[in-house]
Amino acid sequence: MTKPPMRDRDDFGVALVTGAGSGIGQGIALRLAELGARVVVTDIAETGIADTVKQIEAAGGTALGQKLDVSDPASVNAAFDETERWDKCVDVLVNNAGIVGINPFLDFPLEDWNRVMAINLTGSMLCAQLAAREMVRQRYGRIINITSVSGIRAGVGRTAYGTSKAALVGLTRQIALEVAAHGVTANAIAPGAITTPLTESTYTEETVARLLPMIPAGYMADPADIAAAVAYLGSPDARYVNGETLVVDGGYVCGGMMQTGSLDLGTKSSS
Ligand code: NAP
Image 1 (cartoon, helix red, strand yellow):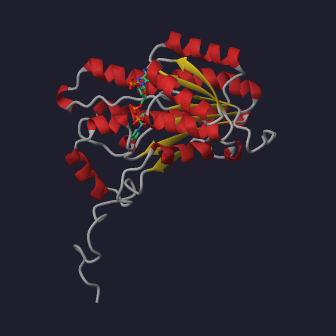
Image 2 (image 1 turned 45 degrees about the vertical axis):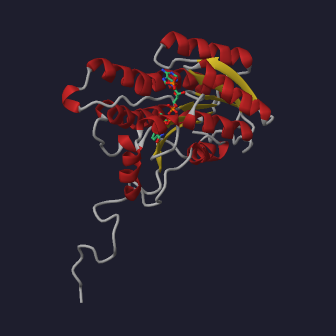
């Protein structure tokens, strides 16, 4: 087996980001453009797309705005066709679009379950499949799935969300295994608590007050913190990192029962 040729480390090529009109996706699109990628800014909402494209162009970058509903296979196909007409195939795919849909497990509506799965999981699979076919052909590609710490630790009401994000970690490994020999990587990023329109509309002051003590770093991060991880995993430099999930959460997942409090809390002296 031969090693894939090493790309110039600054050559990000064409990057397609889903859900790029808001929050984390917008932060990722802006960062990739800053790194020189020609960015296909996609989202279900036209206003968000226009805003991100405007910001990229104002900073001297290159962007194509493209409406894309990841839960609709026809929309996914059309967006990838349009991308190929615009430039060439996608070199970096970031599956970022996602919804939460909180309901108690005992009464979780099937309709809501199906919607969350269609966007968070099936949508990511469809986009990755289309992108990977071309990536394999050109022997280069970076697929990044935005999962969540909710895919690692359970949370009340997150029956569909948490399950979809855990499955996305599994999907990432499945893809990685089958594309690895073709110069293509698939990795996941699991953000912790990030300040975005999503969390601003769903977190109350009480939610934040209860959350912060569980985050060793002591604060909620910004979309730029996730974009920084994409900057590495999406780069030519990351060619030997495959099937991995990078947790970006200020230490939240690594904590256990004694993650806060003083050193002697609940510990008998050994002397
Ligand atoms: P956000 O601000 O709501 O951004 C998500 C974007 O995706 C929105 O523009 C949304 O459009 C779009 N979208 C929704 N359904 C779509 C569809 N069917 N097709 C294409 N785009 C669609 O959320 P965010 O906080 O930036 O989250 C981005 C990703 O990070 C999600 O996958 C989320 O699960 C993950 N994440 C976030 C956090 C956090 O703390 N914020 C933590 C862990 C993981 P509309 O606004 O019109 O619905």
